[in-house]
Structures are given as structure tokens and as C-alpha cells.
Image (cartoon, rainbow, N blue to C red; front, side):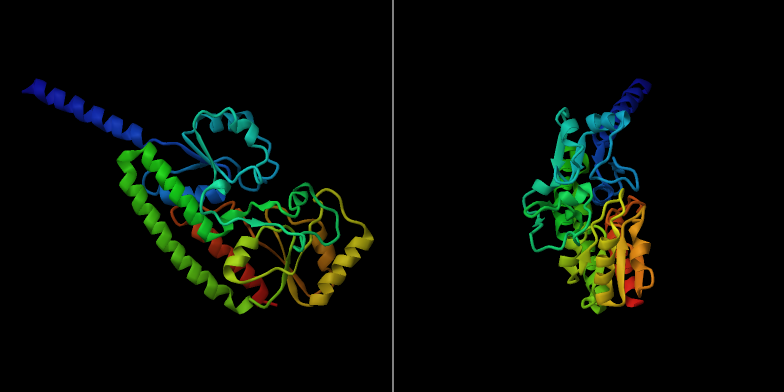
Length: 307
């Protein structure tokens, strides 16, 4: 009897170990917004990892040796694509596990910069703004909830294949995510309805997907170098542009406000504020992605409503 009991215990322990091993799928995303989408899909099972720390730029991040090891070791890796994380393709070439560039997923809505877009206000351009050339992909695609749904569906399918024991949970989480997207879309449309006719300026053209989805539009982009202050003539031209609009908001992205911001706004009825496209410090929870979108709406509307 005791021998049978012992065999039973060994069997149960072994089965539990196999189930745990199946569920232990390591997911790594390049940037925080993708981590937030993955966190919704993996809710109750595991917490995905993220490569870039808060405040780091996905355009020119310098990988550390420990980062390279993580890239090579994880089971599933998700990134935007070569139009965003230019530092990743060389490292990914040595990966043996799955890597997904979400900009290439079927069903993704991709915007492209055009010659008519106001990417620069005749100013000094930084390295990233050169990438905003006509015809190039606008890689800030995570700010479209429709794109987030496509990404989440791909993650759920990949995880279900890698971890079939939890496939039902991934499917349930995906359905819950879709339902929350319906709710957050409706909430944001209502939140920004009163500012649809208000114009604003940004220092980085990162928000076109968000603007397109919710019926708002920036008036111009002050794409200036973070290293070199523009000349007096150029500053005067930008100040004149702001003066044309009277009361308005100029948004930068954390963690650093461009040095030019205070110079541009001095003496003008201009409010300086921030929009965090990456949601740097948003907790990686099931609700994290909609919190990112909701905060953008609140920060944008909060500034413009206060003019």
C-alpha cells in the first residue's frame, strides 16, 4: 500500500513539474507598450519581460552584454520592426527561437509619412527625424488600439502553441482584452470630443496613430536636435509660428524636455506639457495598455482644456 502511495506521489510530482515547465514560457518585448499587451495575454500565468528600461529611446538604444544574452535566451521575442529598433536586427540574426516583428503582421494598419506631413518646422533635425522621410513607415503603431488587438491575437496564438496546457486561459485573456479595447475606445472618444478643434504642437511626431483613431490633429512639429540649439533666426521663426495660434500647448516626451521648450514659450500664452507615448512607468498588468492610452487622452485634454 505504501509503495503504491509512493508511486502515486512520484507520478503527481512529475506531472506537476511537467505542467510547470510547460507554463514557463519566457516572453521578452523590446519596448514597454508591447510588454503591456503581452501582460494582458499572459495575465494569471506569467509576467513578460521588457528589454528597454524606462526613459530609453527605442531608436538608438545601446545593448549591453546582459541584454544580448536575454535576447538569445527567451522563448518568444516581440519587437516593432527595423523601422523602430534599428539596433536589434544584427542581434536577432543569431536567435534560434521565434522573433516577431509586429509591423509585418497581417492585418496591421500602417501609416506612412508623406511629403505634406509637417515633420519639421524648417529646423535642425535630429537623427530620428531623418527617419521620418516621405514614404517611410510610421513605426509608432502601438498607439492604435486596432493594431494592439492584432498584436495580442498573435501573442495568444504563439503562447497557446508553446504552452498548450494554458491555451484556454490565453484565449480567455484575449477576449477580455478585446472587450476592454471596446470600452477604452469609447471612453477616449468621449474624453477628447471637446478638444477636436484645438491645435497643439509636439517635439516628436509620434502620435499620429492616436490622433487618427480619436479625431484630433497636431498643428506642427518642432523637430529639433537634442544636442545643438538652433540659431536665433530659426528660434524666431518657431516663436512666430506659435504666436499665430495664440493660446496653445506644446508637448514633449519624458524623461527630458527639450532645452528649446522654455525659449520658445517665454512670454507667449503657451503651456508646456508631456505626452508619454511609451508609458515608461506603467505597471505591466492586464490593464496596463489601456492605462497608457487613457493617460495620453487625459494629459492631452487636460492641457488643452486649461487654455
